[in-house]
Length: 91
Image 1 (cartoon, rainbow, N blue to C red):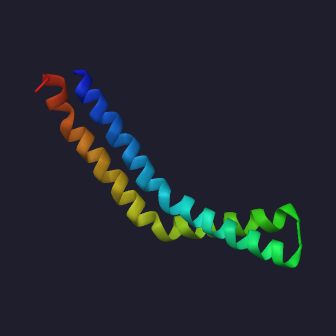
Image 2 (cartoon, rainbow, N blue to C red; image 1 turned 60 degrees about the vertical axis):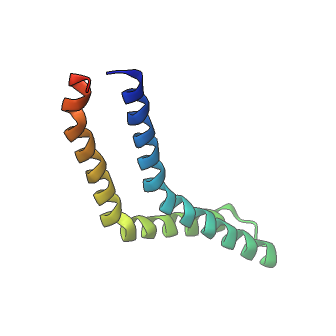
């Protein structure tokens, strides 16, 4: 394995992790902003008011995106497994 192969494997892993994590994190950020705005308007500053809706929204996002997330992970794993002979042989 040459350094370029290691860099390419690391780049692919980081990109896949970013793509897989982005929808859930995006839902958490949007829900956090919405709850923060509601808290600012109503002046309710309880910690559980901000925590529970974000967690529920993120769980719903995972449930909704799970088939797509699994497909992306399977594609990445398949690409890595099929690329093993090329990496081992150095070509």
